[in-house]
Amino acid sequence: QVQLVESGGGLVQAGGSLRISCAASGRTFYSYTLGWFRQAPGKEREFVAAIRWSTSNTYYADSVKGRFTISRANAKSTVYLQMNSLKLEDTAVYYCAAARPPNTAWDEYALISYDHWGQGTQVTVSS
Image (cartoon, rainbow, N blue to C red; front, side, top):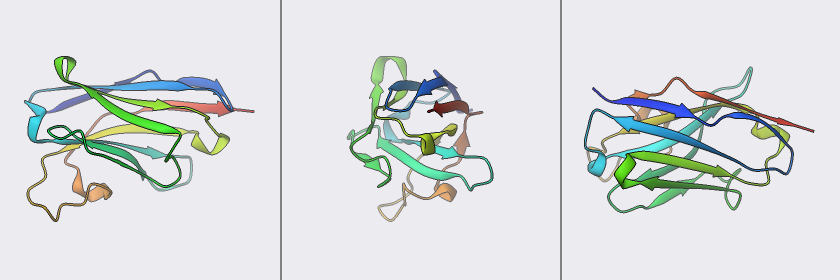
C-alpha cells in the first residue's frame, strides 16, 4: 500500500524560501511519477510540479516555473519541492501525489491521473 507523508510546511515571508518533503513508502517507485498539488481556501486543487522517478523528467505549472524545483532522493524514496521567491498567492495546503503511468498518453498535469495522496502540509506566505 502506497503511503505518502508530507512535511516541512510552515510560515514564511514573501520573497522567502521553503522546502517541503514527501516521504513515499509501500512500493518501489522506479516506475512511478510523483507530483505536488496545492489547494488554497475556496479554490480547486491545482497542479504544481511532478517528477518521473525513472528519468527525473520534471514538469511545472507556469505559475511556479523558475521559482520552484522538484527533485527526488532515491535512497530515501523522498520527493522535495524547493520553493523560492514565494508569493502571497502560493499560500495553500500542498499535497503529494503518486501514480504509475499506464501508457505514454498519461497526463502528469491532471489531478485525476493520480491514485495516491498524502494528507497535505500547510504553506503560508505572509507579507
